[in-house]
Every structure is written in C-alpha cells, then in structure tokens.
Length: 246
Ligand code: SF4
Image (cartoon, rainbow, N blue to C red):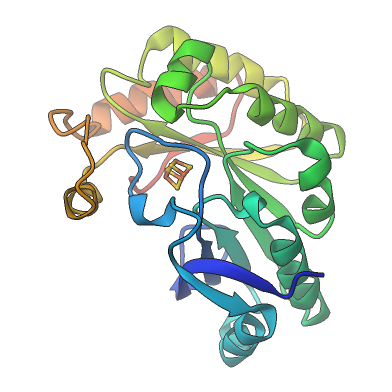
C-alpha cells in the first residue's frame, strides 16, 4: 500500500463524472499530451500536492451523506500513473459503502491496471479517436493500450461508459467515428457513450503555462455536429448521447 499520492485538486460536488453526486479526486500527472487538454496543469507529475489516503478519506467522510446515491470518482491527469494510491482510495471507499468510478485514458499496462480495476465499480474510458495515426496526433501516444483495456473490460463485464471528445476538423472525421462506433458496438459492457463537444474553456491555462495551443483557431463543436456524430454511434446500436463539453 502506498498511502500517499500526488493530486491536482478535489471537487466535493461533481455531477458529470459518473452516476449521482460525486466526490472527485483529480490526480496529478499524465503521459498523454492531448491537443485539447482542458487541464494542462494536471499533466506534469512533479506539480500538484502530495496527500495521504487518510486525508482524502477524511474529506470524503464529510460529504458522505450526499454521496450515498453517487460515489467517488478518481480522474486526472491519469489516475493509473498512481495505481497503488488509487486502489487504496477505492478499497477505503468500498469499506464506507461508496461506489467507485475511474476516469482513465486506458494508457497503462493491463497488469498494472488490473488491481485498480478490481476495486472499480464503473470505468469512464476516454477513447480519443480510433484511427491510430489520428489518435497519435491528438494524444502523442499509441492507441494500443486503450484498445487492449477496452477489450479486457468487455471480457470481464466491467460496467463502462465511453467518452469521446468531438473536435471539428480533427476527431470528427467520419471514418474515425464510424470505426470507433464499430469497435464499441462489439463490446459487451458499455452502458453508454458520451460525445463531449470540444470547447475552449481551458485555453487560458495554456496561455498561463506558456504552452502553444494548437487548437486556438478551432471552433467549438456545434450542436448539429454533435447530433450527427451521436447518430453514427446509434446507427451501430451504441447507446450514445451528447454531453456537456470538454
Ligand atoms: S488525458 Fe486528460 S489530462 Fe491527460 S493530456 Fe489528455 S485531456 Fe489532458
């Protein structure tokens, strides 16, 4: 057990990262470099602050009364960079009778992820594209680990929500969406798929960090584009819906 991890922040009343009202832990550190990242300040593993699992559980306990129908979500950054820390948080949440959700890109060795997944009630799996070259362009990493995780989650029947960020002139490529839809339609564990329209609410953070924001001239995804994309997923039998943007 590690007992200590690095986090970016916590949110005590989240409503979009899993069912019900949720306590959300945003871990620090991410191996991806998504062009649209809304939390670029979450990415460097050395930033953020060190906290103990005991500290987090004390904060969660204060909110316990309204988390009964919701639960605790660990997001990031990429939580699977700190597998022992996340597993321990989830074990303690289960001891309190709280539901656990893991928000991940899936970019992790399966053997490292499995002990965390054992303690996870719901996975929010972010699949950022399907065509390998496009996935790499969007994230700067390979898609293979994410696909391997998606297949494994299907094999073990783990409840999963898929999230797909829709970026005009980037991830909205029809072939990209159709192939992703075909892939997801073959999974047996996906309860729903959320199409998250790209927006630029994180742009100021890129400026503060003096990073080059390549999408500064990209427009937010329109409701029509979101609907067209949702329809492609639905045409394959996937339970897709538009969601609040990223
Ligand atoms: S996975 Fe999330 S935190 Fe990491 S770079 Fe992509 S959007 Fe940012």
